[in-house]
Structure formats: C-alpha cells, structure tokens
Length: 205
Image 1 (cartoon, rainbow, N blue to C red):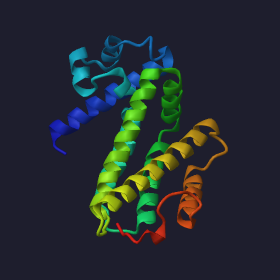
Image 2: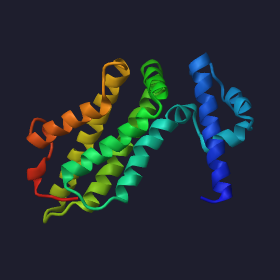
Image 3: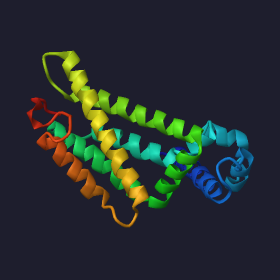
Image 4: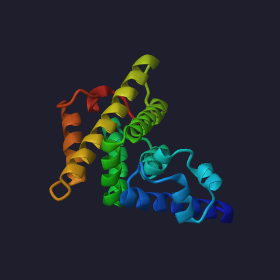
C-alpha cells in the first residue's frame, strides 16, 4: 500500500471511529453528518467521498469483516466444500470478535433503526452473492445449473450460521463461544443434520 492509499485508509478509519462514538453517545438519529465531519476534522464533502450515507458508517466494520473474508478465501488453495465453508465462517467470526462492543452496537442500531436494518440485509445479501460466485468458480461438475445451485445453498448456509452465532453472542455475551457454536453448526452440516451440501456432494473447492 502506497503512502497516498495509507493516508486515505487512515482518514476512512478515523471518520468511521468518530462516527461510531457519536452514534453510541448521541444516538443514530440525533447525529448529523456535520457533527461527524467536525469530530473527524474533515469537511462534509470529504466524508461523503468515503461514506455516501450514515448507514454505511454504521456498517463499515461489518462490511470489512464479511467482504474481507471473501477476498481472503479467493486466495486460498482448493479444499473440500465443508472445509471451505468452515474456513470462511471462522474467518468472519475471528474478525468480528476483535471488536465485540462495536458488533453489539451495530445490532442494537439495526434493531432500532429501519434504515440501518435494511442496509445490513443488503450487505448480507451481497456477501452471499460474492461467496456464491467464488464457490461457483471453485466447484466442478458437468451440470452448471447444479453447480450454481450447490454454491448458492452453501453460501446461504454459511451466512445463516454466521448470523445465528453472532445473534446468540450479542444476546449472551458472557455465555457463548462463537467458534464452538460455529463448529457445532458445521458438524450438523457435515453429518446431514442441516439441509445443506455435505462431504457426499461430490464436489471439491
């Protein structure tokens, strides 16, 4: 990363962090773009170049975790389908665990603010689509439609596990081990306890 890109990333991170501080202190609805820009010591036009809406500021951390996992997965060697799904799931959860307070705050805002909830669902759907595309690229089989169907089911299963584990973690911060829950879910997938492709799908990644 060059010096210019490094400075841009630092500015982006500063804006997101200051915005989140204000959202938690003042509330999402009562925080203005002008207040966020002032706290980050940038102009509103600069803020909008990095984040087109307030909702994208809320979800910046979650987006980095989800989309970063897909980017990471693209660089991994071929693996069996269940192993690939588990790797993606654990990568997302490891990143989310780095900042539990922010994750819980995101879910609280999504529960309280319809626009944040809608943007979160759009982000989740985009993650599923991009993971599906990567799985299609990796899967083999004579029937392209079946390959795409298997990939879409697998990406949906991965996202469902992530959502369920994170929701339980948010609601029970002291009583949930996220990786253990994810491994239990993957055991169900591998053993046929959940309706998703397992080792007997006949495909590799």
